[in-house]
Image (tube, rainbow, N blue to C red; front, top):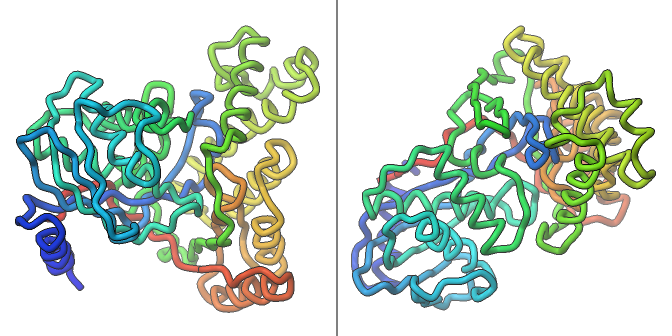
Length: 386
């Protein structure tokens, strides 16, 4: 089905829900991060790609200051709010994400009033693929165009990050929002999260006989449950103790001396952040050099660090990584904030079926539900469909 036909279907559903035709449809993608996990809130480096899976927001501007929200994946009801009364902690459930985008745009001084918003999505939720950032970004972009604003994409990402930080209550970094809004098709985005410098690096596994797979373990995670905030607070405390603006400023050659100065519980966090930034630097050298097969070892090393130092892995994600290695994959690692979610696996094209089958069989033997496995294709960032 083409994008235009798909958008027409969304427009028909919008009319059935709201009783009028929409102005347009906007889409924002989920993402996988090739490498650079838990580095963004430490002013570090990341290397995400956008996915073909998107959140679509079909929208129409309103003149009465009312925000009406409907989701195809919701309970069938319309959530109605007043934009002037939006405040952190006042909206529950899925609706808090689009509401947060409207709140954050207004809080940043932009004239955004009411809107009817119809949401549809094929980004798996709770899978570490950034479905929440995609929803918030799609809403922000829709409102941006409906109200004829002129906000640069990087600034819009900052606004969307503020929406999740302050309105939703998740202390996330900037990577997910930048990835959803700024990635380009066929590229990985090398982002310096301190100054938002961006470099688009060609990323085409198929051209080198490889495939990047996403394995959605089905283990749901909620970054608002406190564990993520504790990790961020630990990193910030470590930076303060070391007299640094952020852990990004600790170089590898100073790591050993720095660890001696820290309490035991903070040392693994610092070790992960410093080594993960170095893994991003290595990956950024490998991709342009046409050495994508060597990225596998970088992924596996990153997973070991997330598992052993940051301790955000789980039995299901570890099982995917271990099984993929035995079955012949080049490398694999958990992607996203952790505590469940998805794993990316770099595989030679001829080995895709055997690696996928081995993972599914391992899950069956362990008594886990069958994982969803699909290719990760570097797609375009947020855009208007029609």
